[in-house]
Amino acid sequence: MLTPAQAQLLIEQALVRLPIESLPVGQAAGAVLRENIYAERDQPPFDRVSMDGIAVASQAVLSGQRRFRVQATQAAGDPPLTLQSADLCIEAMTGAMLPAGCDAVIPVERIEVSDGWAQLQTDAGVAPWQNVHRRGSDQTQGTLLLADGVTLTPPDIAVAAGAGMARLRVSQQPAVMVISTGNELVEPGEPIATWQLRRSNVYGITAALRHRGYARVADDHINDDLPVLHSRLREHLDSYDVLILSGGVSMGKFDLVPEALSLCGVRQVFHKIAQRPGKPMWFGIGPRGQAVFALPGNPVSTLVCLARYVIPALAQAMGARPPAPQQDKIALAAPVTFNAPLAGFVPVRVETDDWGRPWALASAHNGSGDFAALAGTDGFVELPPGPADYPKGFVTRLYRW
Image (cartoon, rainbow, N blue to C red; front, side):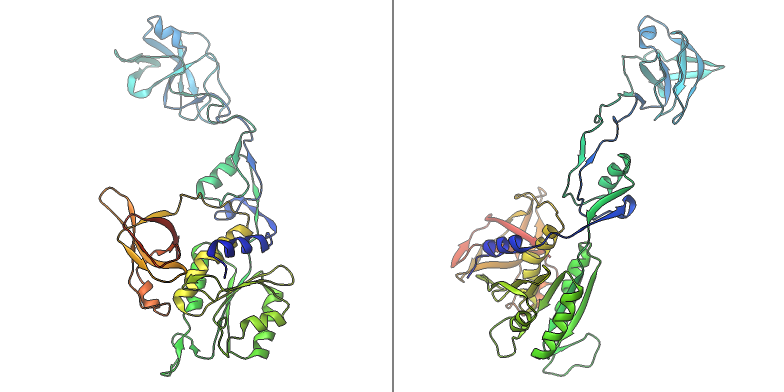
C-alpha cells in the first residue's frame, strides 16, 4: 500500500489546475491570486507629511529662528504649495504633499499658533526630513507586491487596490459535490429506526469546505444500488469539478463505489493507503479531469482523509502556494503509544503552556466510528508507522479540521 506521502504525491500529479476568472478587487478576499501585482508608482508617491504641524525649511530653525509667519495651509489632496521665503512656514496636514522649499515638519504639539504666527516651544527641535515620509521609501514603481499563488487576505486586497487594480485574476472556485452512500443513513430530524444511522459525514465535510471559503458546494445521498450509483454519479461528473464521496469503498458486498466510478469512466489512481484510520481511501480522475475522492464511511476516517488529502488538493488545484514546512509543526504534550504498522492519525486538542507554546494533547477515542470523541478537538497529528512509543516533545505535523 501507499504511504500517506506517496498518496499525496499521486494526487498532486493527477490534479488539473482550475481555470482563471476576473473578479472586482472588493470581491476577491479569500481567492487565490493568479497573477503578479506590481507597484503602480512609488509609494509614497511624493514626500508626504506624516504629522499635523508646520512645514519649514529646517536650516532656518537650525540658524536660530523660532517664530514664523504662516504663509498658507497645505491640505491633503491639494497640489503642493511653494514656501516663498525661509522665514515663513506653511501649516501642513497629515497625508499632504510636503510644500516645495520645505524639508521638515514640526508637530502641532510643539508650537503655538496665534494671529497668523507660529511660535516654536523652547525645547522644540528640528532635523532635515523630520516627520516626512519620503517618496519611494516604502517601495518604488514596479516592485513586486503580491505574487501569483497567494491566498488574498484583507491587507492583500488593500495592497492590490493601492496598486490601482480594479479587478484581479484569481482561480475560479471549484464546484464540489459531496455524496453520502448507504441504505442505513437517515437525515437529521427524520424518524430513525434502531438499525439506522444519522447522515452526519456530509455535514462535517461541507462545513469544513465552507469554513475554508469554498462556496460552490452541494450534497446528495445515494443508496447502495449499482445502477442508481452509476446513473447519479455520471450526472454529477457532468456538472461538478470535484466529487467527494463518503462510504462504499471498503471490501464488503455493498461497497459499490469503485465499480460505479469505473463504469462512469473515472480512472483509478489508487485505492488504499497504509494509514489508520482511513485505510480504504480511493482516488481517481474523471473523463474531464474531475477529481474524485472516495473516503471511507466511518466518521473519523472521513474527516481525517478530508483534512489530510482533499483540502490540500483543492488548494493546489486553485494554484495556492503550499504552506511553509514548519508552519504546522507541533510537539506532543504527553507520550503516545501507537501499535499498528501503519501511519497513525491521532485526534488532538491544541493547548498552550504558560510561555505561549502550543502542544498537541491526544484525545481518547473508541475507534474510527467514534465521531463524538472529535468534539473539542482541533485536528490530528500524523505519526510514523508503529509499533512505537512517541515521547512527550515528539514533533510532528498538525492537520486542522
